[in-house]
Image (cartoon, rainbow over all chains, first blue to last red; front, side):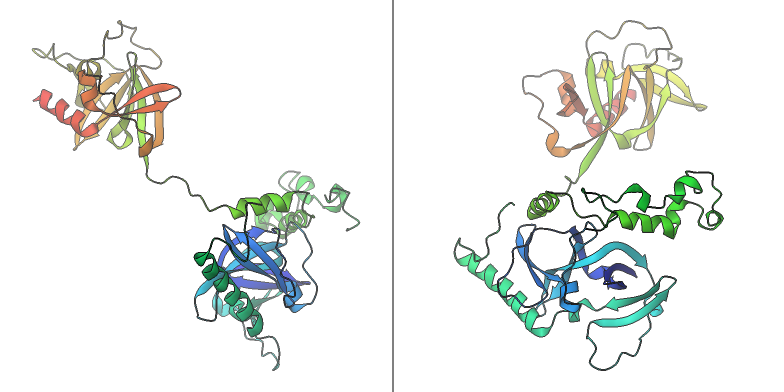
Length: 170
Length: 230
């Protein structure tokens, strides 16, 4: 299996590459006022508004620095109805992919109450890589907020030419 | 800003240990890791240096430019490309689909066949020990004023070996450009005013390097050639 690596702080994490649609450079984001922590904003992904979640802010509490290696990983994420929607994850050091067998990841036996997205761990010569279950990354409240909003925006757009979130060329 | 970066956000060169330039493949090759990794690009030191380069802050305008790029709908390359070999006979540039071609060979002596002097058959040639019929496309297509007799070894003078329906044929050309790929939409119709036999074998006109190239209809061309050999 192919995994896309990224960093949170100094630790490495892996996303299953099959869930990744595209890796983009850091784009300009439209901020969402009074958005919950971790929701960085909305960006124009090939003409449609897609929410971006800063993984670093979501889990560690500080936003990812603006670097060339900080990128937006577009994944397909199920919304409340189970339909896959694109979601941007802002991740640091998203520059490497590895090919590993699923069995090489070992369940670490995490204590109860640890974040639900943390998966099994792979050890290599540079340390540990932890599998991130991207479907459990967003807290329920954030997920409902992001995807119900997107659906609402599309419906509104169909009825009238005015869209709540206006997307233009730049 | 990190102290190892200059005002442009570029890491000063002394911050990167460029061992590949000194003891690696670009240097004297004395690195002890080299026999194991074969090339520096397989080495973890090299890839970590590469990752370090990506730790720069983006240059001004970088985000705006990419934001603009990704706000456009994805465009994919035009599919369904057709490939043809472009060649010249006399003054005419012609194209024939690539899959009809077997080989491009050097011009060689043509042995004339008795009683077949006037048609499109030029004679027989020896191609890899086999006798192939050599035909004249210029006579078939009615390309005016056949090029004047040339010395035998003209650099661009070539013999095209074509295969259609498992039948081999050869025909001489004056010049070959090579394989050209185009999209079916690029083909223009043959003007209706062109009324000679050339247009009967041409299924479209292709613009290539400011020249008009006639794309030959291989089905019709080979059918006529085979018929005239009978």
